[in-house]
Length: 241
Image (cartoon, rainbow, N blue to C red):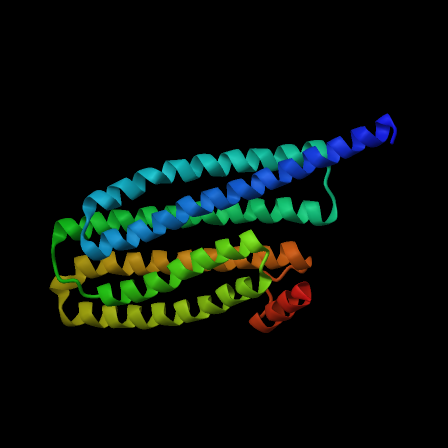
């Protein structure tokens, strides 16, 4: 093997290392964001204002990681001019990082409302719905990160499918809380906080669904952002095959 062959192999391995690094950092950021969501929901349900404040402080870390990974993605594109699957990997990671940062933002909002509700100390009306929807979206975040770690498009599809259930539960909970406020105007303040929490949870589910779509695109090469669930399932199955 001549010098040029050695040099090409070295450059290729270095490129692989760079790609693996941004993928690892995505999963690391995902772990932090997953903890934010878990802590935010637990803080609200248990009235733990200290935990809520601690989780809110974590948001700056996720913001910093988003900037770092975005910078690395831009540098790789400028230096390596990747094509095909490599470019899809970088694009999918960049988009997934943006969704993770927004999930962190929603978790921070939940913490803010958790602090207000803990200080208020009023009826816990709507908390059952928060617990239920919170469990659904926490599972979605966990599963979509697992899907990214394993390049598992079938699991990504199941995450997207779960988002439909979250949307339905959200609409039902909203109707219930609005009816409650109409019947008892004294509960408007606390109920509004719960409504905003439910809204943030629904948005977290949306972002997890977005990440699932990015993964299917990464593995299959098919852009399923505006596709039906049936079309996404077909793309996922083709990539698995």
